Image 1 (cartoon, rainbow, N blue to C red):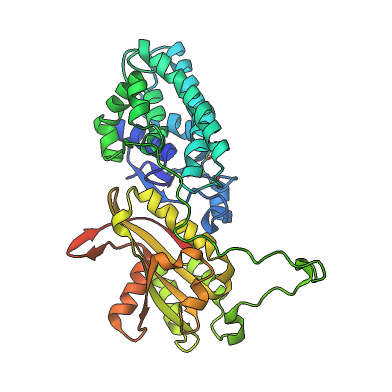
Image 2: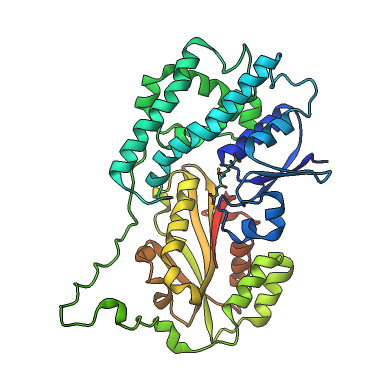
Length: 407
Ligand SMILES: N[C@@H](CCC(=O)N[C@@H](CS)C(=O)NCC(=O)O)C(=O)O
């Protein structure tokens, strides 16, 4: 029987830290994949807000009903279940020092590193000056660890503790994106320590392939830039804000019998295979909507799975103008350096372009119209929206890793 459920993501540092601590103490936790997005439908639901009132991850619900949020608290609670654990140190001073490193890495180090890599990953607005400044501040903060680890094998005492597991987990994304070869050769102590921790059996069991980036990732704008804005109106023209908003071309199709929001609610609030899909096929009207397989064209350029997932997130953000006419889900399948993006959308009307060309990067995807009367195509729609089966491409099986729903 599992000790409880952990709401989080398999490649999220705070989630990893708790899973490794549990593994180290042979405690079984069930990971409930939950987006790192407080505004996502599930994260905003009353059910999840009872577990974490601010909708973030990680959060924990014990088999006995005990709920807890805040990564440090969950990590300590999980670790302390083993009365004989060595992960919490030997003395009160050890314990206090462990909490010191948990707090430092969670509240000081991670936010500074994230301010550096998140804009480069396209997760936040990019401004070169701000990112360069953030990089300096982050490297200085990592320097606190480098100094400490120059004179100490581990963060606290002479053996591995929760402090090491927690700090290394929180650093996984930084080592995969910005703490590159040059940084690592300039910072031998943290590099030696990080390699030691990620090679522990318990760590490898949870997160087997941490990436050490060769060169700090570069910000890449979406493949196709937005069309240049129309020239400023001449003085005698009406000011822009008074002009009526241009209509979406799909508005001309009128009101369909299948209301997209009804379907989106079904999908969000019920089990996909058991309830939502039967509802969908009963209500789907092929004269009003078309179904599209939407696959990324440049899978061979994809590297890390979380970056591929971020690409999907960016595409969906840019589809905002067509939210009233589209529903879909796209997933990342496979593993780092061997992954692909696949998905299925439903679009109002019979063409893909009017719905998708609001996103300048629509050209990075192949759109293949599906036939809702074909059994194989119906299966594809269900697989792509249920996220519970792998895909096979060229004889190779790729497991679902992550994804975004456009709803
Ligand atoms: N103080 C919280 C912070 C949790 C947190 O920021 N989680 C991030 C992912 S690592 C998140 O869920 N962010 C979602 C959002 O900001 O919308 C903790 O230590 O657990």
